[in-house]
Length: 637
Image (cartoon, rainbow, N blue to C red; front, side, top):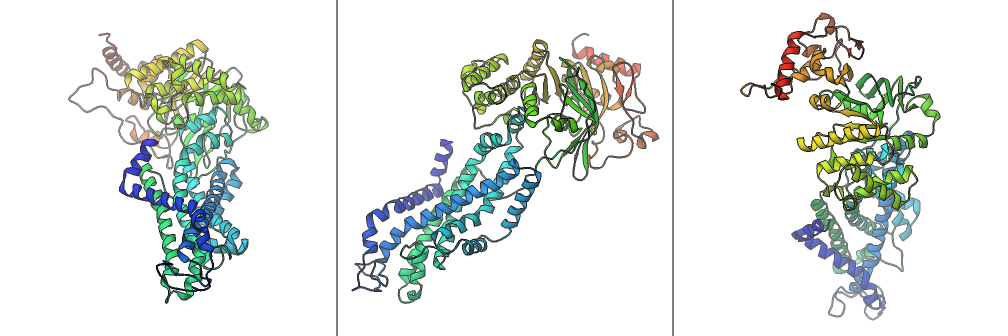
């Protein structure tokens, strides 16, 4: 932070604007103390005189020195502009955060009001509010403050929307942190910097607007005065005494430039947005009535659908069950619906996305439907916060960059387990030690950027272990890590499963990783499970052409170096335009006419094997070829 400020001040524009702004603020602070007497002294012998050695800018109609009055007016002008900016920032912050805190209808109403207000010019809004609040300094401050609020509200909506999509916010939701606390502790600290920069720029605009209202007679009233009022009083004699009218205008320009240039320099140096808007929708899940709950399973998912306006349905009828201490893998290409399935289970699908299912229950507690409505929101948060853990695929965005690792781990324990600050920190250090992070006492006091990628991922797993998790959902936890760290993370998950009888849902695009650590494998394509089978049967028993294509696309030691790597022909289907019949038919070498007309259901082939295919393949030749390449890869030949 300090280095960035130094870098800004080292630039010519930044240094010049900083010095100019400092000079303006010092003038506003000390000018009334030093020159107030000279500015208010009445001299009837020298009325309306021009510039002279005694009076550099001449005198007004009471013989008062205009130069000193311009200097003394700096405090009133800048103070009122800063007050108006504060009102604009506070009001805009409240309006911009309202969609995050309020329900769907109230949030949409607030957003609509902001969108309508932004469409009007700021000066027009200021004049409108000036009429409402009345003539005078107080009315002008309120008018300019509320006129500037819509722009800050739009900016706040944009910034909140960007931060709310980060993984550390989703993690806070998973552990059951309330909306207000998420906003206060996780979102606002990450948007404070651009808001402060834009407030600095906005102060220059507020200064100009306030001078305009005072010039029109709607702002500061006699006997008080600011730069705008001084311009208005000198307007009648501008042709015979131009210095008296131009001097306050020059002061407004200089002060406005100081605020604007300094704000622009900081914005450029920090790389923050400047008053650009976006909208953030609220989450309103639409569900079906839940079915009976299986008390023996950790997680039960039946006929899960996730849809978005369009209509787009990237998850279509997914069903599976995870038992205690079981590791279930989900594989498939990007866009197959793996992560959306996990987010739906974790209750993290945001509006306008909709989640519905015949049954979605965790530890016997329904998460959707009428039975879920009967339970309190606090009870569901407590259940997910203590018994559900989620590890995201990007370790860099899994933590709030403005808070120390130990504080972030301790938050869930304080929220749901009633621990004191000291107890929660001790628990956080113990969990960091449990996931094999060296020197956990020192590391708990560090920020996320001071951790390596593998350490951040292990710390994220440690956050899930702050309670007593029954299920860990790991969404591609090894994607951004090298192979050595991948092995460490996978071994850690296996160790946690073995020692604590924790169920794990491991999502990955790497089918070999899933085959190594999982008990069962779910293969997803186009939002559906197309095959489910034990991981030890994956090498020889895969029957769906898509599963076999995924296996064949994995290079091994037998892969010819002078030939192109095996790929799956074609491209995944568009979730907004699913073709009739089997979604994989256009890419399948075994497709028949029936495949392009009828969509196959998931049919059982044996005790623990299901396949959704009209023409499942299981030939001895393919098994022999795969076994031969597998033996080479594992060094058995």
